Image (cartoon, rainbow, N blue to C red):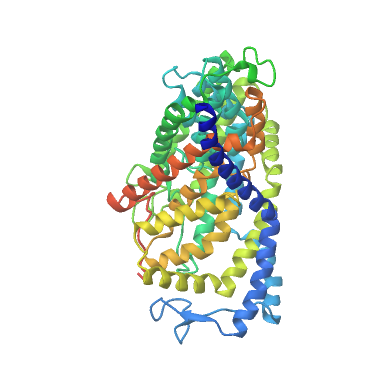
Amino acid sequence: MHSSASQNQVNPKKTLFTRFLDTVEWLGNLLPHPITLFALFSLAILVASGIAGYFGVSVPDPRPEGAPGRSADGMIYVVSLFNADGLQMIVANLVKNFTGFAPLGTVLVAMLGVAIAEHSGLLSAAMRGLVMGASRRMVTLVVVFAGIISNTASELGYVVLIPLAAMLFHSLGRHPLAGLAAAFAGVSGGYSANLLLGTVDPLLSGITQTAAQMIDPTYEVGPEVNWYFMFASTFAITLMGAFVTEKIVEPKLGSYNAEEASDDLGQDKMGKLTALEKKGLKIAGLAALAVSALLALTIVPENGILRHPETGLIAGSPFLKGIVAFIFVFFAIPGFAYGKVVGTMKTDRDVIDAMSKSMSSMGMYIVLVFFAAQFVAFFKWTNFGQVFAVAGADFLQSIGLTGPMLFFAFILMCGFINLMIGSASAQWAVTAPIFVPMLMLVGYAPETIQAAYRIGDSVTNIITPMMSYFGMILAVATRYQKNLGLGTLIATMLPYSMVFIVGWSLMFYIWVFVLGIPVGPGAATYYTVGG
């Protein structure tokens, strides 16, 4: 009787949770593909600008008199594109919008370097060496940590580390789904954190810069502007992820029953490093040290050639402005060195093939950028971003929501939107033109706003069925538990999401508002209009 009563108490909660998940999946499925979404948004802006322009929608310009772009009467008007002038502007600038879209070139250049390191086998070997070399006591920490740093090459963590972590836990007599969950939490829940600058940094900073220039046309946002905070976040997420795995998820999963597996797993093959791979890693490490030493010679001395030519500082220097080129070099040279040793890259042809394969995989991204670039350009031309920003900033000030609580609300909102728009770039391309100018007018710098967005965009990746790798991860999980469903996987990951959103947001609050530490090199925390 007691067992029956307890089941009756639990079932309603499970039903409610399942309904919530079903609703999220249903809403997500209602949304068209992100590319179609941007095309529809672009058309909607054209029509909306015609209506707003007809009615003379405007707001007071908060910028001081004489500021660039400020009208004589001190008002910001919505500009209609739904007319002959608008059509001429669209036709004349269609290609320019695409080729001039800030993240396009930077992401592609960074990816060329990462491609060499990935296709040579360096990143995979480094990840396997890190995870499999961990002691039994440290294995959970190392799995989460490896997941976070695998984000430098976005697909590698999902394709290599998550299955590897499940195998590792299984071989240690621990529940394999706990290993899978720990790796998934690091790869996806800690998506924006990293020790190194990766492809996501120039991707987001380019969108942020375009949005910031709606308020300040001269404002620049480099790829490095969140590095301090994301570097520290790597260790914070590692600790939180390991804590959730060992104190919540693994005890809930209980002892593993091999009879639940979908096939005979036997002794999972761990893919241990060969002697040649170990030699390749040593040579690649030496190459990385050599590259780092050369870069240090250009920026550490006071007369370093890549310091700012006038001020002598690193802030605003050619080094920071050209950081994407150094991301390329930092991955390409060690990657080639490793490939040369292990035999995966014997000639220049192998290097070219690696870069070509990487570019061919970017086809979907390039198509997305074309439509996203039109949307961002239309939004800027119509002045909708500035109008929404001023109206939104006035509303926030009227209700007194301008302090730290504003960022908690912003992070939660980004996390919710991420449940239905899983792409970091797609979501930020939609939301940045509204929220970056709005929060700048409230008094916060774009760099700080972007850091908060990255928290919200990361923490709900692990609980949304819209995440592109969710199906693959579910397939890996069913190897160990054949009847495992979507709801069970999301329920397993939910504790990570909850702890990450609370813990990471608190870290952001302490970092920015209590300690007053900048989120990155040369990054401002506050912004004054016209200042």
